[in-house]
Every structure is written in structure tokens, then in C-alpha cells.
Length: 305
Ligand SMILES: [Zn+2]
Image 1 (tube, rainbow, N blue to C red):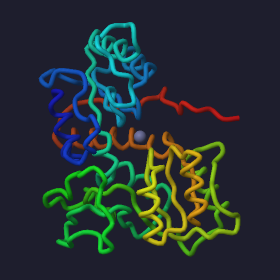
Image 2: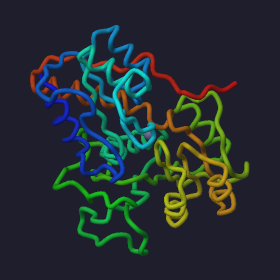
Image 3: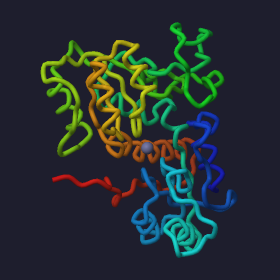
């Protein structure tokens, strides 16, 4: 197969038009016509993931987070004087291409948020922020809430939903809302989140006798007021996300909604396995030979004691 097959396969799953306006997704490094036989997947394109690809002769890497983004200091030259330049030069020198699907994959069916929803064993999936143009012809949120903040396009054209018949929404949404059974006490639910996300410890905001029954989630970086207010307006008692800062935590505490910090990494890392599975299944269906593996060296950047 060639690089363009990877791009087409990934963009059929999570079209580029679903990405936020300030995001940078798609082919980041490489030649669309180059043949690919060994693909590595990861959450981040770290130096150690690139080294892993070089050592194990992978010729392509698919990640969730972009290599070139607003989170990376801008550069005026591609040299080994800076980390971004070093990464690009190492990739090119070793014939390794790179593609990322970021906010478009956050919102895709069986993307970051649906995976997190299933991991947390939530039920009755609903959007946290409704798309501006829902597939059933409704005009938008009944209460005048704004749709996705970035003017992202609405639902896909006639897509039937998750390919395996699981009960996803089948159209892109930012964040999800679901029910956690008959409800449990907040510390119990926080422990459950830590267990399923493989976290050694977990931070939460809320009182120990708070009940967790209706939960909003947003994988990655969801510590913003708009998502919190959407969760509150949908009568969620708990919000699980990552990148939670002091002021956002205070806002939640004073609004009476419990908050669980699942961490950016742990709420998203499972997407690297989903990408590997997606590419493997697509290749098998088309009789194409390719090896796809998940990075064995990726790990959270934060350590805890
Ligand atoms: Zn992220």
C-alpha cells in the first residue's frame, strides 16, 4: 500500500473537516505515493516513539496529537538545533512518514470520546455539545446553547454509525454524556475511573457523599467553562476530563458539579490501539499486507509518587 491509502482510510473514519479550525491534522511528514509496509501508532510523536520506529524499521507513524501545532514553539528553520527540527530530520532521514488525526478523531464514532465512554462503562450515550446540524433534522440545541465552539462541520453525510453495530451516536460530537447505573458515591466512581484508566492515583473535586449517576466526559483537554456549563445544563452530576487547572476546578466546585481528573494521557492513550485495529481491519478487508503495531515505549509524561 502507499501512504495515500493510510490517509484515505483514516479520513474515512475521521474526516478532516471535523477538526477544529485551529487544529493541524493530516499528513505531517512524507510522500503520498511512497510505499508503506510497517506502521507504528502512538498518542504522541515523541523522540522515543520516533527512535522506536527507527530501531524497528517502521516506515510510517500514525499519532493522535499533531507534530506541528500551536503547542509546539514555532520554528523558522528545520535544523537539529530544536526538537521539532530534530524530529522532522530523523523521520525524513529514515524514510518514515507521519500522519495525525486529532480533534477530528476526538469526535468521530469510535474515536477518543466513545472509547472513553465505553471504558468508563457508561450507558445511554448522548452528545455533551450537540452538533449544529444533527442528523435527524433537529435545528440544534433546544435551549439556545452554542454548538461546537469552532464552527466544525455538522454530521457526516449519511454515515450509518460505528461499523461494528455498537450503540454510538454515529455523528461527530465534542464530549459525551451517559449514565452510570443506579449511581454510586463519588470516591467509588473516582476509584473506578482510576482502575479502568490504569492510574496509580486520581484527583477529584466534590464531596465524599456526592452521588455519581449522570456523567459528562471529554477525553484529553476538556477543562473549559463551555463544556462544564454544557454538563451542568444537562443535569450531569459529574464531569470526567483531563488538563484540569486550579480555576476550572474551583468553578466546578462552586457550581456543585463533581470533577474527576482522568488526565490528558490516560483519557486518550487507548486511541493508539484503536487506530492500529482500524488500519489492520481495513487492510485485511482489502487483502493488503501491512504490519501495524502500537508503540511499546509511549508513557505518560507526568510521574507520581
Ligand atoms: Zn489530546
